[in-house]
Structure formats: structure tokens, C-alpha cells
Length: 268
Image (cartoon, rainbow, N blue to C red; front, side, top):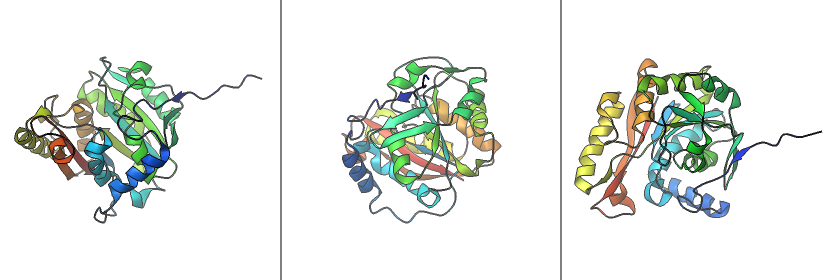
């Protein structure tokens, strides 16, 4: 009898954006959460988080992901939206993989949600968009560290309109949201000087928490397509957001003449 082997999307950026050895990765993750203030007990419906290397934005990741610690058993599914950095395409890309792997193990994909998404216009299976993309992958070790058992719905956005992304989120969600978290992966401004980046990123942060997607484009955030689609969804669901952390690479591990902005946001 032939056995169908599960397909695994292997790690593409372990050893680049974060350690490739599980022990080193766990140690680094533990350090990112150290000394953080006590997190609230409100259930987070969604997070917007960076996707930079952990040496640059690890603390910003942690300020968002610490909010999940009280809900590690409740959260069973995570919808993760990330932009495509290396493969230009139109629409929204899903993956036929059964698992996404990191040094901490493999995370199962919610195949039922993927099947629902595949029926939408503008959504297609496009493995090339996922194979080398880091925007989803870098979220997974943090999720593995703070949650128990969970599945993911990995969605890569290309050139897609706001309503299509919003509809994709709603379709992936479909049923009761009490066990589901949305994660939108995006850095903020890119390669401005330190003070210019601070001004632009503060403007973008205000637009995000004001649910005003019209003020956010590629100049403000590399993941603007996902952010705009999520904001449309959040407005329909009457979610409210707040800023958890805002800084840039000039504050963490880089020079101040050309920086990348990082913000963390929660929606309840």
C-alpha cells in the first residue's frame, strides 16, 4: 500500500534571521521575553508585528507575543499574513504544504481553511511565493515558544486589493474566532534617516490604530497590503487597537543614517 507522505515547507532563513540550532533559538527567545512588564489578560484578536532579524527586532516581537501567554491553550489557530519580498505576483498566495518547519519543529497547516481560501477569486496555490519568504517564517518560532498546539493559515500577499485581503481573512476565520489569532507581518519605513523614520512611523502607527488604511502605502510599511486588508476587516469587526512598541533599527542594532522601522500593535 502506498503511503502519502506529508509535504513540509522547510525553514528558509534559519541561521540568517534567527539561530538554526533549537537550543540556541530557545535561549534567544527566552532572552527576548526577559524583563518585560506583566501582560494584560485581555484576549488579543490580532497582532501586527515586524519580520526583521531577531537581533534587530526581537524585543518588539516579544512585546506582542507575550500577550498570548495567558491564552496558550485557547489559541488553536493562527492566520498569518505576510508580504512577498522576493517573488512579485498579483493576488494572494496560499501553500499546499501540510507543515511549515522551524528548528523548534513543524507547525501543521489548517487544510480546511486553505481549501476555503482556494475557492476565492484572486487566491491561488503559489509555492514560489512561500519557498524563500521570511515574513511568515520568522513569526513561527515565537508562536511555538508561547503557544501549545496550534495550526497556521499561511497567506502571502502580492499585488492585491484591500477588499480581497479582507475577504481572505474573513474566509480563513469563518467560524468562531475564540480560538483564532490573526498575525499581520510587516516592518514600517525603510532606509530613512533616524529622525525622518521616527516621524513617518509615528504617523503610520496612528493610522493603524485609527483604522485608517488610506494613509498607509508602500512608503509607510512593506506589508501595507496585509495591513490595509486587516484594517478593513478590523473595522467591520469593531476591533480596537493600541501601540505596544515603536522603534527602529537605529535603536537596536544598526546605524542611524539608514534605518528600518518596527512596530507592534494589538487589537481586541
